[in-house]
Length: 109
Image 1 (cartoon, rainbow, N blue to C red):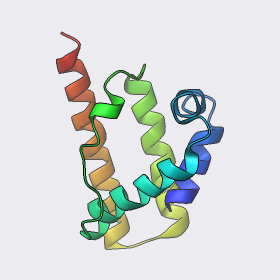
Image 2 (image 1 turned 180 degrees about the horizontal axis):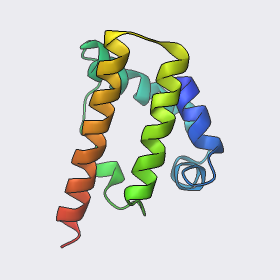
Image 3 (image 1 turned 90 degrees about the vertical axis):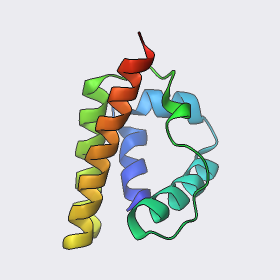
């Protein structure tokens, strides 16, 4: 799922330039971090250490970017999984996007 999701992001006309600009040639390292992050969030196997928000704080992202991110996440999840865990994963991703947007708005004032 992680590989499907981030492959779509890399190629996306809205998100690709942002992600590729920040990550550059470090996609393998970023994917390793994302494996740990989603393993922790979705499977409750505590592999990720850190805080996911700070790296996103200064990115030029707005509601449209989160909408696209969520659409790509849902598509990747649907391609790879179905059932209660997949539904919970999509719910968690949507809540995470809401929280990030709230924090971004709070930090901009």
